[in-house]
Amino acid sequence: MKLYKHDSYEQYLKAQVRKNRRKRNRHWVSNQELTFMANVIRERCDGLSFGICHGVRTGLENKALSELLGVEVVGTDLVCRDGVMEMDFHDRMAEWEGSADFVYSNSLDHSHNPYLALCAWRDSLRPGGLLLIHFGREHKHGTPDAADCFLASKEEYREMLSEFGSVEEIKMFGRTLFVVRVP
Image (cartoon, rainbow, N blue to C red; front, side, top):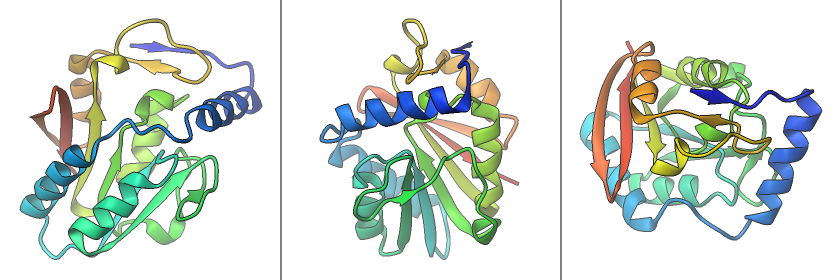
């Protein structure tokens, strides 16, 4: 695992906001992947009613999953846009604790503290809820920087995620979807 060391939280925020604005019209996840994920969620969750997507930039993920699943799905990002709640995904939301059926993100590589982020996400889940982490080869190569501050291999992701529950690894269009069922 490689983690970029920021001089301050403000440096981290500036780097994330700058990258967000530079990439505001680009999407990492495809509609095909979102449809696939909706089926994974539907097959593994009974009584779906609420989900959370962290690090959504434009809100594509939460809007698509909400439509595909027919439930409320909140999207968060450091930059507020239409349909996206402004918040740092490392923070806990008291009103969400124990309430989400699933939490999805493809942005763990933007975390200055991946364990803290994962703890906050886990705490949002109801017992038996799903934590879905989208992983691609770009999440493990290169040198971390102020914006893409966390890099780890697929094996390191799996090991880290296993601390939060049972991990299922699903191949999805050349990428991996880690599905963690929390106790």
